Image (cartoon, rainbow, N blue to C red; front, side, top):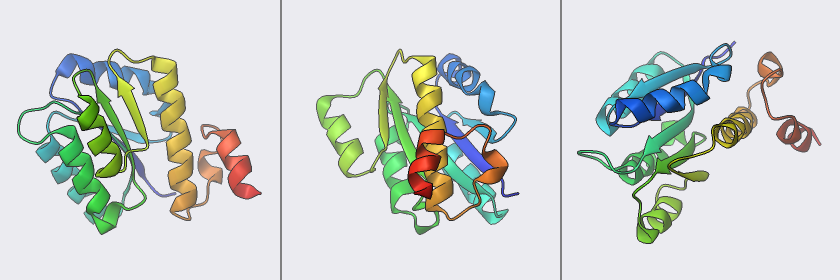
Length: 157
């Protein structure tokens, strides 16, 4: 079975911990990784890709030292290795222009404002992972227990 990864990026440890806690129901099925900077996330993505693993979802804060979340997600979007990777921007400080840029440049699939609702984040990530599996041509059955059934049924039609 292929290894699927979810990468969470935020420079604030308490926010990162909250995201990891909200995604805990997925830990049995997927590798959930945390990074405290965009550079750390890109390095991890290079390592995982070199090991033949998949990056299914990247969840990133926007306002971080060095590279912003929009810049990170834009780089991910433009990297041919990660064309199927789903992207979520999670932020409390993005302007309207930042949001437009995230949609247009980074091609994010979802946007969450802090504080977010844990159940909505988990449901969104489950849907995006399901989309990733089908978009990547992977067999969905090993993860059938945790995938978004509405996406599975729509994709199997």
